[in-house]
Amino acid sequence: MCFVSLCSDLEEYHKKKAVNHLKTNLLYMTSGRCVADKAVTQQVLTQNRGRKSKDRPAEKKEKKKPEGTVFTEEDFRKFEREYFGIP
Image (tube, rainbow, N blue to C red; front, side, top):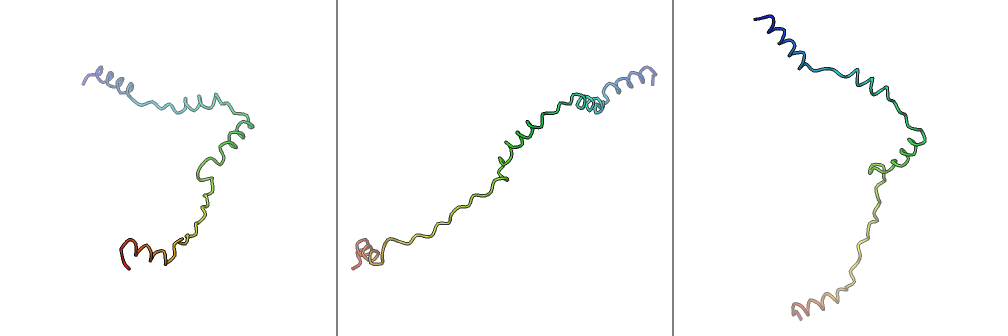
């Protein structure tokens, strides 16, 4: 194996090697720190509170009482006689 070939292989390896950008990214993110006004943040939190379905209480539905029939037994017998022809 040739020394020149080994050097070029090492250079290719270093070119394709993954670079860790964590430190530079952290420095960038912490250097430009802009903190919002506390009044504005409190207003946003107040507006968003209670909008989620888990924050809302379940609606209570009234249970309907079963309604009684408006027909009497005599009405049913009369209908039965008229419809089925039973005397």
